[in-house]
Image 1 (cartoon, rainbow, N blue to C red):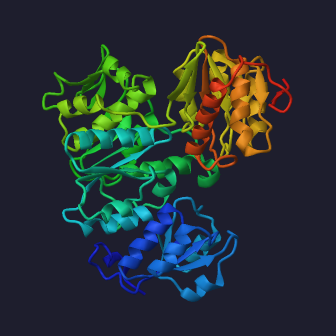
Image 2 (cartoon, helix red, strand yellow):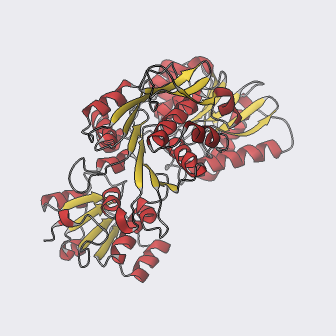
Image 3 (spheres, rainbow, N blue to C red):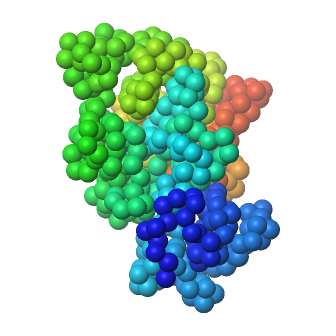
Length: 509
């Protein structure tokens, strides 16, 4: 059996290593492609053998084992006798193959650990900035990357944001900094110590709220996974002053000597914090005279010009600023970079304004914590809500925002749980349920129902508080279909109309 602890460089002896890769999505293929380039003997186990990646795997010299049953350990895998298993992020720890691998005392890595071990393919290797949290990861990752590149730093946004880290570390020109967005799934598979442990320059956990409990098993296990982001940080562990759980995660982390805890929040900052004073974002953390002075980064009015002035967006700006200040950017770099930032699609994105009604796509609000931030931004809302709840209760969210809701349009596989939450906590809010069997009709029906309910001054808000895979490919597909349905509706003849048979039904209660 190979000594895996010695595999900490691109130039280490990877040739001939027998590796089983679980999953043939974007991440799984990047793992297989990398290891085959290194000369390893690779088999990929996937639920389907269809598609372009399966064909490419054969071309580059990998083997595919198709096994749609998650309770089965394929005989071909047992016969292969792997020395290492690398798991794609979505595989639950209780998957049959992972239980089998543990029973054989096989090493199990995620793609992030593999990328860290191989990061020296281009020398010098890039520094890593790590971003996680229940809500705001992608915006903060994009912001930090934009600020870095605007200042002339060669940086890339990678990881859970869609570009595998392994693709970035193999890019021939190399990068100075990788901003790595990490899901709780990826963090679960990351070691906190040893040769595969990541040592980031700076790290942030933006917030913690119950999510993915069906995968992690408990809120404590979910939070523990998130806390891994802080381990071994070199310069700054950045935490949310408004969420003391993130502070506790910093306190529990083993970090490198000299690493500082840096808070961010929307109030007046302390000497080691970033915050807001009289409408100005300021940095007291990375200032030599931070006990008596602060750097100005931007004003709220300047953020408003680029769509970042809402409370949760301003909070993301402060977190991103903390990361890039830890990486050496100046306050002037932050200020000039913010002025040219463009917000991502599907994150509180205004789709249209017509007849006094604003249509907003926040399809990326895939959990109650994210939906709460979005709902808080608007005083009167027709809310499109629902999907796959992932074991999370939306009762508190419904109760908190009942007074601002003109109506709610309920979609998705877990509609019953959403309707029950309204019946218990907001019985006076008018409800409409989208019952279309054809998933292509879900958003057109939801939009027609929302248009009938909305009044001058309202915001029709898609902030589902749920995952999307029951009716859509992903949150982006859900948001794109919403935007398309809105534009089709507003471009059609006639005024808003009352719901007609087949368009949905008013929910009882």
